[in-house]
Image (cartoon, rainbow, N blue to C red; front, side):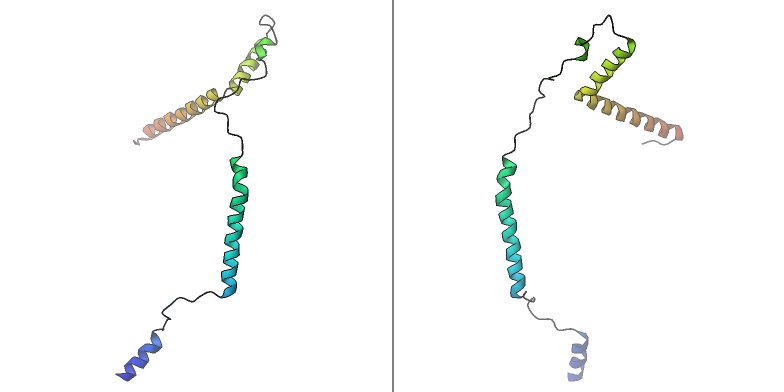
Length: 121
């Protein structure tokens, strides 16, 4: 029986009943890191809070519309297209709507192609 126990002890490593304790230098380093992080949060938090709030409503456009600059009688078709494109470019609501329409057209084409190939979703 004694011979069996000695052979088992060779194959089964004996671990200490407690985890190893870090030495004093590691503990001091961890405390310093925690102190620096806490000081950084305390110092920079008021700056982040002191920023101006975002405007919820869009302010009036300060530049005058392009239509006021030239009269309609003198306007060429190229100028009219330019004005329409500029108005379309400036309006964020139209931009969101155009993007949604573009995605809808893509989806419809994708579904039509799947139906043509015989797939159904």
